[in-house]
View 1 (cartoon, rainbow, N blue to C red):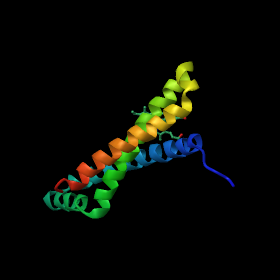
View 2 (cartoon, rainbow, N blue to C red; view 1 turned 135 degrees about the vertical axis):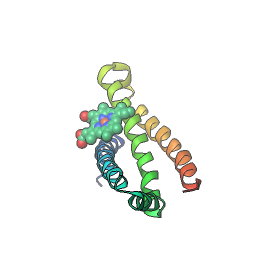
View 3 (cartoon, protein in one colour; view 1 turned 45 degrees about the vertical axis):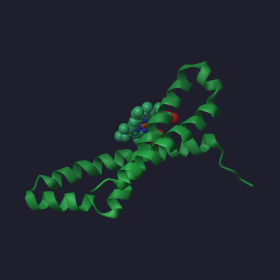
Length: 115
Ligand code: HEM
């Protein structure tokens, strides 16, 4: 049966997280432009940030940034050093472990914080 291996999963996740972060930045700049339209608009955006949809989105954004950053460093190291290239699989798993652990800890802190 067809199986997604760690290299392919990392490749897919790197693309998805990279494009997602760019999407977030565009949305964030648009949100800030809305906020500048006056006190009511400002408060409406602040209230929107407190909704479950946005709070889940913020936690997912943390995960995307963590994975993309750590995996990006792995990719750069693999491009420039034979040491990292030879340990590609190990480093890919370390990225999952580090990004995953920080995602769980950070996500929990964010989720439990008052909005
Ligand atoms: C620690 C910070 C970051 C590192 C080390 C990093 C590293 C990388 C690397 C090495 C690639 C090329 C991957 C490849 O060609 O195989 C890449 C692609 C990309 N990165 Fe980043 N990146 C970082 C932050 C960001 C941020 C903040 C954004 C968004 C604003 C971003 C968006 C993208 C996008 C859209 C791509 C192209 C993905 C694709 O090919 O479809 N990256 N990144």
